[in-house]
Amino acid sequence: MENLWRPPSPPGYVPALTSPRRPDPKPTTTLWRPTGPEELALVRASGRRAWPPRLPEQPIFYPVLNEDYAIRIARDRNVKHSGVGHVTRFEVDSAFLARYPVQQAGGRTILELWVPAEELDEFNVIQPRIPAL
Image (cartoon, rainbow, N blue to C red; front, side, top):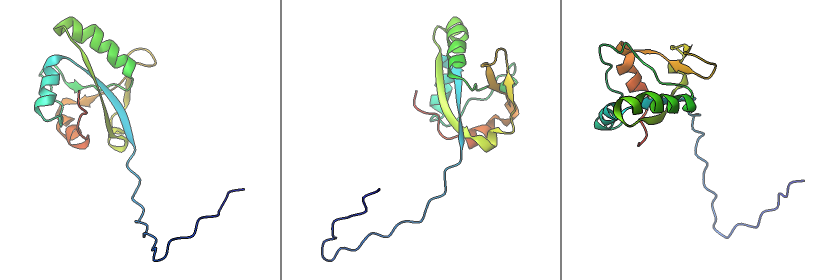
């Protein structure tokens, strides 16, 4: 049985009013993005507020849904091409992400979201700041 006894309040004590309940935060989805030094420099130059526009040969922006997969890409591709690879982790509103079906780009854990390059500006507005790297 729970102990409900409380010590008496001091004279003149007025309990604080409870604040109204704040709405629950929107559910978010954790995404990871393997990046090379050039893309990382552009993210930092934006104040960590935006992913850079895609190059003409890059029709999609593809954050991934699995940290191990992101690490593998950074290690196998970014390090190979530029000598260093980074993995960023960020949260995006889950309801917004629902418009992008999960793409299985290989095995069961190789999962990506394919954001068309022309929608990246909107994606950048929806997501909060990209955490410090």
